[in-house]
Length: 197
Length: 97
Length: 256
Image (cartoon, rainbow over all chains, first blue to last red; front, top):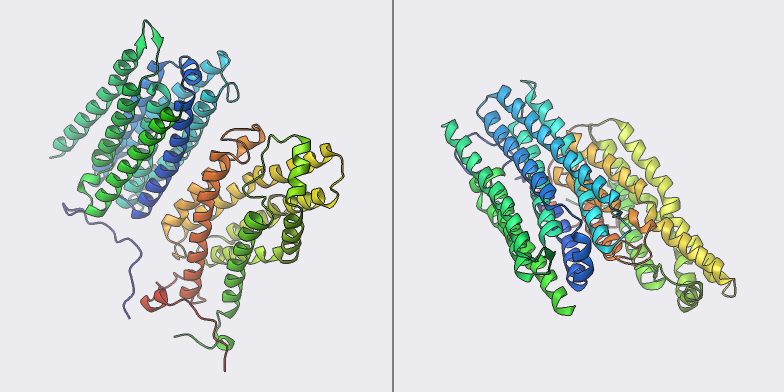
């Protein structure tokens, strides 16, 4: 007789505690974070065992490029967090503007990343040239793929916001949750590749 | 009311960007006469700072602060697991080097 | 609650499901324990070492792959059930047919090639070691390297699930498909490296990838079971799982 409700109910816009976005997306966030943690652990373990070689290769990286890229992505996270709040308050025009800002900063990050890759390749560092750069290109590339998917997600977000009959705060929050994940994964990658000795 | 929200997010962004700039200091501290050196202190602080940033992003930007307890526990649990695995991998690797 | 099998309209679905479970069990036991092709052999082996590898696992390879050649067709039941699940969704049938074609085709390079290559390698132990190495490379590279097709298949299933209004699968499984698809991408570097974490048996390209794939497979088998339990043979949203059915697995009672 009693059936278990598996579909997440539409969250009321009140001060009560509710899960931001679909709980399903959080499953993805946690699972994907664990997979990345495994990749990071492999990198850190091999790095610690071949310190000198990794250090020498790492010295080719430009830390300031990494810092700028991190700040760009953090800023995009900031604007999408604002987007969620303005959408919740019903100010959809502002929310759309914030969403475009997010995309803009995402593009800035992409540009900085590509500039970094091109710079490294000019220096002769490629995926196959050393162990450190194997990990560098692998981690930054797989993150880049996540970022590209993030643009698709932003598209879904904009689609939701731009039509009165389509708006779903839950989907807006779900998209934001994905974007923030891309951001915090980069925070970790930056620390591990650019700073860890 | 809304300005209150915006202000909080702005402060969070400032803090996160500030910590990011702090990495330049850590990086500089792990140099001897302009030459990079391995440094356990620098590495561990880099990882710990990153995890702090991740927690801030989750609690403030991702709104876990206002989420049910289960989600708070799961995300904090995730960060603890990451801390143990990352620091463990690095320190064990170093010990076996 | 449980009808005698003869009268149960879901009978064929249950046959397919049990066959799929049997296939994955058989595949795991044979590939991992009998033939020892998983975890894969070392990519950096010289031709002589490869010849020793074939000799060392000679009996396991022949017996194991003989069984796979006989029973491997059961893999079709898993693909069929997934295709069925996509057809039950509210999305266009194009998704179901694309998935079916992709996986049916990819079974050849991604599953059969390694069976044939390894059997051929074992068949003549006195063959030129260079040729043995060729068969060894061909087998392992085709198994690991053809991930692209599986990747696209996962993305098709993911898109269908996220667009579906019939709630055949929970949305989190749609996202899990994305996780699985992304770990498949990670296998691509195995075409470049003989050693290290990106080799075809590397920590990243094999171990982590297979771990995720194992979880993914276990999850979708369980969700397919739930789908069959919930199936009402309509075209609207699937009803939710009754509490009772969750506790007791469907039993194959033979009608008296």
